[in-house]
Amino acid sequence: MDINEVLSVTDKFPLPTMAYRLAGEDERLDFYKTLVDYLKLTEHTSGVELELGHWNTEWGKVLDRVRTYGPSIDNLRPNYFRYRTLRLDGEFVFTNDPFFEHHAYVIFLRLLFSKYLSGQNKIVDLGCGSGTSLFLLDQMKIGTELIGADCIEEAQETVNIIGRATTSNIRGLPFNMKTLEGGEALNLAGAAVITLHSMEQLGKDYNNLLDFLIAAGPSLVLHLEPIEEFYDSARLFDKLALTHHRQRGYLTGYLTKIRKLAAQKRIEIFAEKRLEFGSTWHEAYSLIVWRPI
Ligand SMILES: C[S@@+](CC[C@H](N)C(=O)[O-])C[C@H]1O[C@@H](n2cnc3c(N)ncnc32)[C@H](O)[C@@H]1O
Image 1 (cartoon, rainbow, N blue to C red):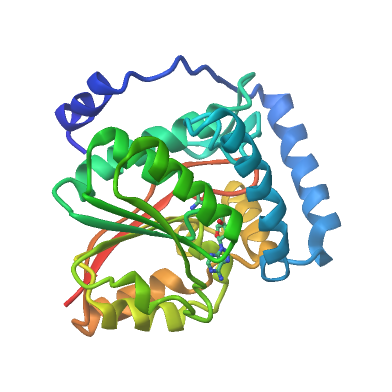
Image 2: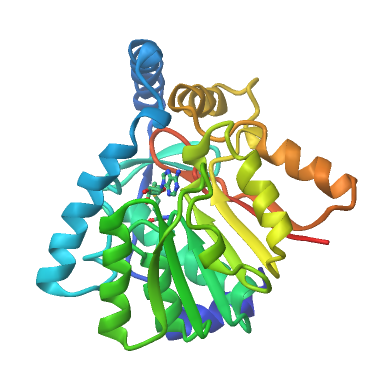
């Protein structure tokens, strides 16, 4: 992204103060050892496919907060943004700010939305969770119809509260990315579709959704997800993330499939990029932007 494009966003939405330090050599070795030991312990734990019920609780907590205090970037923040050891540019860094990752998430979204979604009318966020994306799009005055789709009722209701609080055209709708239940009501023809840390939950079961997206004819599809193809398993730093990725059962083979579809001229890829940032465990910040042909 050109520096002037970045400045045009950060001038309107100033960056918070964010500080981190690099790990010292001993600290770094200790930390790698701790992670390797931990990943051995979690080797046989269950992955995301068994955890759908967990989202009722997660989004229920956010819904209670938003009902009481109203929507804001802080009130919509999911509780899983809490790590003080982060992955940045191929190394671990430490911060005292438990919301450092969330600040970065919001900055990435603003920049990506400005670059890829400006001028779009309808924007649909699949697996929208608490709907931070819709709140940001509304602040940035991007999109005239904003839909947050999720299979969890508490998430849909939170999005509806954002809609009422902002008086913009923002709605929550039910949609299951696996079964495609609720898909027709989304009317994706010509819309921009985004998935942010949500398709990760599908593991290897993304083919139905992908076929559905290609057939529905959106103008653009933007993913910010953990993408295993970007990890280099010969590097310990990446191997740790890849091990976690596989233990959790996140997206597998998705970028390979997207590249194959592009080679068959069924889709066109605009961007594929690892942003080199993540939580302690992995990097859920890889960008893929494409559209069906
Ligand atoms: C890690 S959260 C990300 C939420 C939101 N996109 C964000 O960035 O804050 C994963 C989301 O995927 C949703 N999800 C998981 N499986 C789903 C499915 N089969 N259909 C629709 N949504 C699903 C969860 O309800 C949750 O909102």
